[in-house]
Amino acid sequence: MESTTSMMEVKREAKSLGQLSNEEPKLLFQPGDLVAFSGNSWVGRFIRLITLSRFSHVGIICFHQGRPLLIESTTLSPFPCLLTGKRIHGVQAHDPYRVLQRGLSRIWVCRLQRHEELAPSESERLTAFLLRFLHFEYDTPGALLSGTRFLKRRWWASREDLTRLFCSELCAAALKHIRRFPLVNASVINPSELIREGVRLGIYQPPQRLS
Image (cartoon, rainbow, N blue to C red):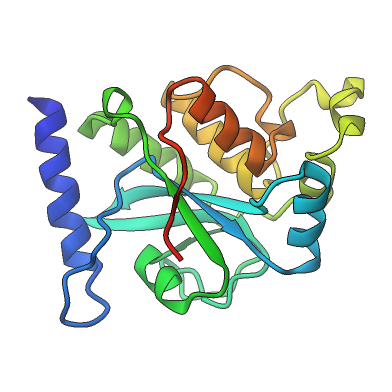
Protein backbone atom coordinates (compact mmCIF):
# COMPACT_ATOMS: atom_id res chain seq x y z
CA MET A 1 0.00 0.00 0.00
CA GLU A 2 2.81 2.37 0.88
CA SER A 3 4.52 1.74 -2.47
CA THR A 4 1.26 2.43 -4.37
CA THR A 5 0.74 5.67 -2.46
CA SER A 6 4.31 6.69 -3.19
CA MET A 7 3.85 6.13 -6.93
CA MET A 8 0.66 8.23 -6.97
CA GLU A 9 2.49 11.03 -5.20
CA VAL A 10 5.37 10.82 -7.65
CA LYS A 11 3.05 11.16 -10.64
CA ARG A 12 1.13 14.03 -9.09
CA GLU A 13 4.27 15.88 -8.04
CA ALA A 14 6.09 15.33 -11.33
CA LYS A 15 3.11 16.66 -13.24
CA SER A 16 2.99 19.78 -11.05
CA LEU A 17 6.60 20.72 -11.83
CA GLY A 18 7.28 19.17 -15.18
CA GLN A 19 5.13 21.46 -17.29
CA LEU A 20 7.64 23.67 -19.01
CA SER A 21 4.78 24.48 -21.38
CA ASN A 22 1.06 23.74 -21.08
CA GLU A 23 1.64 20.10 -22.00
CA GLU A 24 1.87 17.24 -19.55
CA PRO A 25 5.42 15.84 -19.43
CA LYS A 26 5.83 12.56 -21.27
CA LEU A 27 8.29 11.25 -18.70
CA LEU A 28 7.45 11.06 -15.00
CA PHE A 29 10.61 10.95 -12.94
CA GLN A 30 10.72 8.87 -9.77
CA PRO A 31 12.89 9.28 -6.67
CA GLY A 32 16.09 7.28 -7.05
CA ASP A 33 16.19 7.48 -10.85
CA LEU A 34 19.72 7.79 -12.20
CA VAL A 35 20.09 10.21 -15.11
CA ALA A 36 23.17 9.48 -17.22
CA PHE A 37 24.81 11.79 -19.75
CA SER A 38 27.28 11.48 -22.61
CA GLY A 39 28.92 14.89 -22.78
CA ASN A 40 31.53 16.32 -25.12
CA SER A 41 33.59 18.39 -22.70
CA TRP A 42 37.24 17.38 -22.34
CA VAL A 43 36.47 15.85 -18.94
CA GLY A 44 33.54 13.91 -20.39
CA ARG A 45 35.55 12.64 -23.35
CA PHE A 46 38.40 11.62 -21.04
CA ILE A 47 36.08 9.69 -18.71
CA ARG A 48 34.41 7.92 -21.64
CA LEU A 49 37.80 7.02 -23.06
CA ILE A 50 39.32 5.54 -19.91
CA THR A 51 36.14 3.73 -18.87
CA LEU A 52 35.33 2.54 -22.41
CA SER A 53 31.75 3.64 -21.82
CA ARG A 54 29.16 5.92 -23.37
CA PHE A 55 28.48 7.50 -19.97
CA SER A 56 30.54 10.46 -18.78
CA HIS A 57 28.26 11.95 -16.11
CA VAL A 58 25.41 10.90 -13.84
CA GLY A 59 22.92 12.58 -11.53
CA ILE A 60 20.11 11.34 -9.30
CA ILE A 61 16.46 12.31 -8.89
CA CYS A 62 14.94 13.25 -5.55
CA PHE A 63 11.74 15.05 -4.61
CA HIS A 64 11.69 18.32 -2.67
CA GLN A 65 8.58 20.33 -1.83
CA GLY A 66 6.55 18.48 -4.44
CA ARG A 67 9.18 18.85 -7.14
CA PRO A 68 11.42 16.31 -8.86
CA LEU A 69 14.98 17.60 -8.70
CA LEU A 70 18.04 16.42 -10.57
CA ILE A 71 20.89 16.56 -8.06
CA GLU A 72 24.32 16.43 -9.66
CA SER A 73 27.89 17.42 -9.01
CA THR A 74 29.30 19.21 -12.02
CA THR A 75 31.15 22.29 -13.22
CA LEU A 76 29.55 22.35 -16.66
CA SER A 77 25.87 23.12 -16.15
CA PRO A 78 24.60 26.14 -18.11
CA PHE A 79 21.86 26.61 -15.51
CA PRO A 80 22.02 28.20 -12.06
CA CYS A 81 21.12 25.96 -9.14
CA LEU A 82 17.33 25.79 -8.88
CA LEU A 83 17.38 26.17 -5.09
CA THR A 84 19.81 29.10 -4.84
CA GLY A 85 19.73 30.85 -8.20
CA LYS A 86 23.53 30.74 -8.32
CA ARG A 87 26.00 29.09 -10.69
CA ILE A 88 27.86 26.42 -8.74
CA HIS A 89 30.96 24.33 -9.40
CA GLY A 90 29.91 21.31 -7.41
CA VAL A 91 26.69 19.82 -6.02
CA GLN A 92 23.59 21.57 -7.37
CA ALA A 93 19.90 21.07 -8.11
CA HIS A 94 18.09 21.42 -11.44
CA ASP A 95 14.69 20.88 -13.00
CA PRO A 96 15.20 17.59 -14.90
CA TYR A 97 12.59 18.50 -17.51
CA ARG A 98 14.42 21.71 -18.33
CA VAL A 99 17.69 19.78 -18.68
CA LEU A 100 15.99 17.38 -21.09
CA GLN A 101 14.44 20.21 -23.06
CA ARG A 102 17.82 21.92 -23.49
CA GLY A 103 19.23 18.81 -25.22
CA LEU A 104 22.91 19.58 -24.65
CA SER A 105 23.98 15.92 -24.64
CA ARG A 106 22.69 12.38 -25.03
CA ILE A 107 20.71 11.43 -21.92
CA TRP A 108 19.52 8.13 -20.42
CA VAL A 109 17.44 7.26 -17.37
CA CYS A 110 17.93 4.18 -15.18
CA ARG A 111 14.90 3.33 -13.09
CA LEU A 112 14.85 1.27 -9.95
CA GLN A 113 13.40 -2.20 -10.36
CA ARG A 114 9.83 -2.36 -9.06
CA HIS A 115 10.84 -4.25 -5.93
CA GLU A 116 13.46 -1.57 -5.20
CA GLU A 117 11.20 1.49 -5.60
CA LEU A 118 11.39 3.90 -2.69
CA ALA A 119 8.77 4.19 0.02
CA PRO A 120 7.88 7.77 1.03
CA SER A 121 10.13 7.60 4.09
CA GLU A 122 13.05 6.41 1.96
CA SER A 123 12.43 9.16 -0.57
CA GLU A 124 12.58 11.72 2.24
CA ARG A 125 15.85 10.25 3.51
CA LEU A 126 17.33 10.41 0.02
CA THR A 127 16.36 14.07 -0.34
CA ALA A 128 17.71 15.01 3.09
CA PHE A 129 21.03 13.30 2.35
CA LEU A 130 21.48 14.94 -1.04
CA LEU A 131 20.55 18.44 0.07
CA ARG A 132 23.06 18.16 2.90
CA PHE A 133 25.80 18.21 0.26
CA LEU A 134 24.40 21.12 -1.75
CA HIS A 135 27.23 23.49 -2.80
CA PHE A 136 30.00 21.01 -1.89
CA GLU A 137 32.87 21.53 -4.33
CA TYR A 138 33.42 19.36 -7.39
CA ASP A 139 36.27 16.84 -7.12
CA THR A 140 38.01 17.04 -10.49
CA PRO A 141 41.03 14.85 -9.56
CA GLY A 142 38.71 12.21 -8.12
CA ALA A 143 36.56 12.22 -11.25
CA LEU A 144 39.56 11.80 -13.54
CA LEU A 145 41.13 9.06 -11.44
CA SER A 146 37.91 7.16 -10.72
CA GLY A 147 38.11 5.45 -14.09
CA THR A 148 41.67 4.23 -13.61
CA ARG A 149 43.18 1.30 -11.78
CA PHE A 150 45.74 3.70 -10.32
CA LEU A 151 43.28 5.08 -7.80
CA LYS A 152 41.82 1.74 -6.77
CA ARG A 153 45.27 0.30 -6.02
CA ARG A 154 46.44 3.08 -3.70
CA TRP A 155 46.13 2.63 0.06
CA TRP A 156 44.94 6.21 0.49
CA ALA A 157 42.05 5.48 -1.84
CA SER A 158 40.63 2.85 0.51
CA ARG A 159 38.93 5.55 2.57
CA GLU A 160 35.78 7.26 1.39
CA ASP A 161 36.20 11.04 1.27
CA LEU A 162 33.04 13.10 0.79
CA THR A 163 34.53 16.53 1.46
CA ARG A 164 34.49 17.14 -2.29
CA LEU A 165 32.36 15.15 -4.69
CA PHE A 166 32.32 14.11 -8.32
CA CYS A 167 29.09 12.99 -9.95
CA SER A 168 29.00 9.22 -9.45
CA GLU A 169 30.57 9.53 -6.00
CA LEU A 170 27.59 11.63 -4.87
CA CYS A 171 25.06 9.20 -6.38
CA ALA A 172 26.74 6.09 -4.95
CA ALA A 173 26.98 7.63 -1.48
CA ALA A 174 23.29 8.59 -1.58
CA LEU A 175 22.22 5.10 -2.70
CA LYS A 176 24.31 3.54 0.06
CA HIS A 177 22.62 5.83 2.57
CA ILE A 178 19.17 4.50 1.66
CA ARG A 179 20.46 0.91 1.35
CA ARG A 180 20.01 0.60 -2.39
CA PHE A 181 23.67 0.00 -3.18
CA PRO A 182 26.37 -2.25 -1.65
CA LEU A 183 28.68 -0.85 1.00
CA VAL A 184 31.44 0.03 -1.44
CA ASN A 185 33.80 2.99 -1.47
CA ALA A 186 31.79 5.66 -3.28
CA SER A 187 34.94 7.70 -3.89
CA VAL A 188 36.29 5.30 -6.53
CA ILE A 189 33.12 4.60 -8.55
CA ASN A 190 32.79 6.12 -12.02
CA PRO A 191 29.46 6.63 -13.84
CA SER A 192 29.79 3.49 -15.94
CA GLU A 193 30.52 1.29 -12.91
CA LEU A 194 27.62 2.73 -10.95
CA ILE A 195 25.13 1.98 -13.69
CA ARG A 196 26.62 -1.36 -14.69
CA GLU A 197 26.68 -2.65 -11.11
CA GLY A 198 23.20 -1.33 -10.39
CA VAL A 199 21.83 -3.28 -13.35
CA ARG A 200 23.93 -6.39 -12.66
CA LEU A 201 22.76 -6.57 -9.05
CA GLY A 202 19.11 -6.25 -10.06
CA ILE A 203 18.71 -2.86 -8.39
CA TYR A 204 18.18 -0.87 -11.58
CA GLN A 205 16.58 -1.52 -14.93
CA PRO A 206 18.80 -1.13 -18.02
CA PRO A 207 19.30 2.47 -19.21
CA GLN A 208 16.59 3.97 -21.42
CA ARG A 209 17.61 6.61 -23.96
CA LEU A 210 15.76 9.91 -23.49
CA SER A 211 17.53 12.21 -25.93
